[in-house]
Image (tube, rainbow, N blue to C red):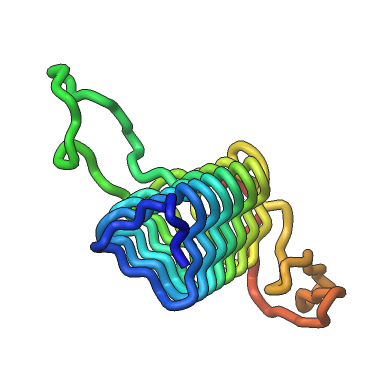
Length: 192
């Protein structure tokens, strides 16, 4: 389903069962998986890759160089950047073109959730099942299952694949909500 006000390039690939809502734009070369939801005003730039069953909320901006794996949640107004040194013009005053900047690639791993208004700087990886809190500014890689918040992002704890916090008993990590147990070695709490 593609809303009549959406602008989807004929060179983009849209998977079966994916819904593209009003005012969304999907650029040439973008590949969107099956059973995804692209909310109102979502922007998907050239050559962005989105896996299956991804939910992208209203006004999120996914710029070139981004790959999103399966089952990811991207909240409203999230922005993925791709240029570490942005300028509108070159030193000589001429307008910048695609040849005048260095694209940095960003990866969001399976099952990760990124809260409303978060900003992810270029060239990073958000780990599998990680949670980035609303309004967070991510400046470094986020480990698998880490919960990060703040500006810059800091690890606040770790989460289960169900999204709830896990607790450490000295040997293993446990989720009280669903009963799953984990043996991962989390990174030390640090600014990321």
